[in-house]
Length: 169
Image 1: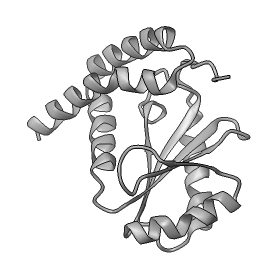
Image 2: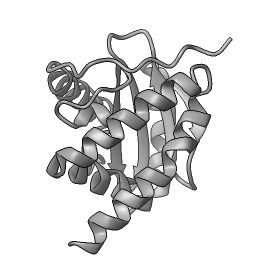
Image 3: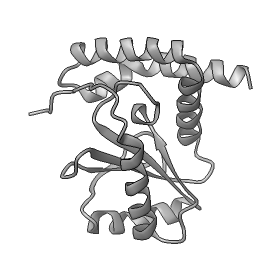
Image 4: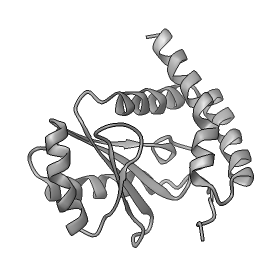
């Protein structure tokens, strides 16, 4: 049975959790890591979110991504496969509190760039973040047991915000 989708009040400890997880990922994966970025709603101060730290780990190439899969699995991360586009691999760790979802992706990846733009746009525009919060809470009720449906239902808002952010750069 699918797990119930839960949106919780922002937790001021999320940035610290991210820093700890990032340090452990850097040690686990090694010197190939180019960047580790806190993405998703837990990366936006004040924004309600699923109690799940989302992280993008940027590696030099698709080959480096593939080479790191066994390392992630060996450390207890559940391989969720290629979730969004070629060369983006998702991993979950649900035995931790908070849970963590890590994406391995190659440098220059468009999905990663959009995630960073969206995160930064929400941080810089509290009114847009408030609108996103309201949408997330509404969709969490509508898609209570359908995480993929929830994500799809947010896509237009996210894409519109990314387009707006790009237009004012």
